[in-house]
Image 1 (spheres, rainbow, N blue to C red):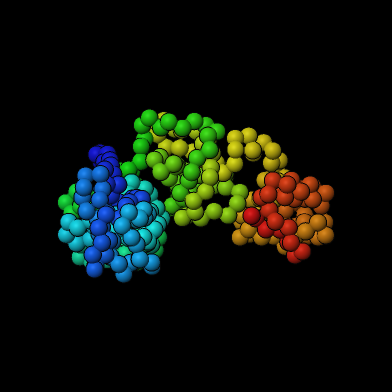
Image 2: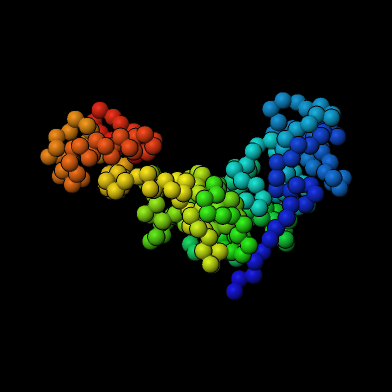
Length: 287
């Protein structure tokens, strides 16, 4: 059994965006102090406009080589203790590297890899502080950083989702940056992809602590009748587009959907009202 690991930001909010005050300036750059009077350095060449003493600046605090704390005004894609969908940029004898929007790519040590990481591909990672070097690293070991006990969300609750890979059942996701979730294929009625950050709704919390999620509020499916479900399913199977409109012949509609023209028009109107499809002169498209 893998031991659960937790990380915590220090008083300096290491690995996070902080609003800090300039306390010293020299020829090389600007200096801030954290709550423990640790000095943080921001190079002058990284700042678009000159700063003055006592200026309040939003900076991201991190480390590269050595113990020097550094700051940058560049906002990263992700901060410490967060999951993110990131691109692998390369690898060497110590691990792989991912682009997180920081001045330097983050390392993914071999011990933090779960399966193969191919250069150019995107995967979900958790950002944490390496206890040996004090630097930020990325981990692919999702189960080490999600909670399967005391899952304090309830059916019907709106949640934040980060989609990250497909399975035989649907699309896996991170729920509220804390839990592991799944959107079943049968609950997917619009185009979504790994890497998307979207809202969802808790369907149920399973006994194993995993969360089943839907993309619509509870009770929504009741408002989508059986024939509308047929239209949605066929759209999904045809890359989200069907060359059918309310002007199409009954024969074409029957051939494509097995529905009468009257039922098709009713189903199309139902989906359009719920903003699930867009109507064009040459067809209908999933939103």
